[in-house]
Length: 357
Image 1 (cartoon, rainbow, N blue to C red):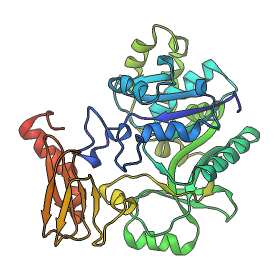
Image 2: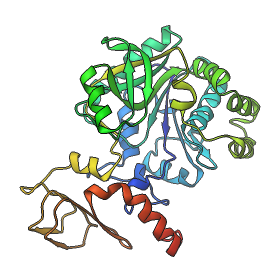
Image 3: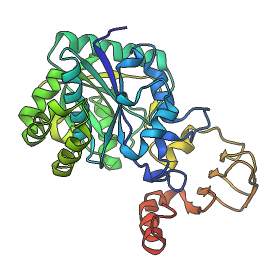
């Protein structure tokens, strides 16, 4: 293990696309939606643990999730949890970790990962991450991980590569395309899915903040002396209240000229929608994905059904539906209308407040 390599787990999201299972009080990263026996964040920690020392993990999360992080990863100390007072997207999240790490270890290398993705082949994954760590160790590079696409998916961002080598300079980043454009990307052979995983030296990313996000650099540089002290909470509260919300992709990666991508194929999914859970789940003879033991289906096909343990559900006559039952919310909607979940949340919140959100 390299004592200069750190893993930063981003765990501040709310996971609204998995409502009503994912809630503000217990969002997606703390759930075992796929029935693996582990929460997403626990699986993320265990994925990196063979190559990163325990003391070199950091989790950046909303302060209201601090206790849940420690519950799911009890190996960590409280000092390893960086608590955001409010969500400000990935650039401020990464800046918080980077400026903290630079103070702790100026020679640090950072692996930044979401907390809620699925990796099926973890040995191949660690091999790819190891190559990226070695590359940034000897190059001033901002690296990301790309996934070779298997279909023209409109739910992912894409990265255009400049060569067909395993490590390639990035030509451009593209937001989620329409189906026709996604098909064009696949046919060109130049595009990979953006996995949202980053590797760089801490000094390289701070130089990038200085150049491309100078306001953020100024805010975080001003509080470096307060980080890892009793003054940190108040200092971060002030910085985040002034910090503009912006993603690391838009703020830095799309602008920098030293961005490289390592292409890989290790069974990755961001498990970002109920549709992706359906694709990843075991199906019965009628293509139904049943999450829960008490589900009985009749004349029902191609549906995903999630019910709590200890409850029995009888489902008759549905085709291509999402059925999710919790203690206080029942959602039934066509799979084709999954994008409407945000509207459902807004309507419930307007009528009932945050109680069911």
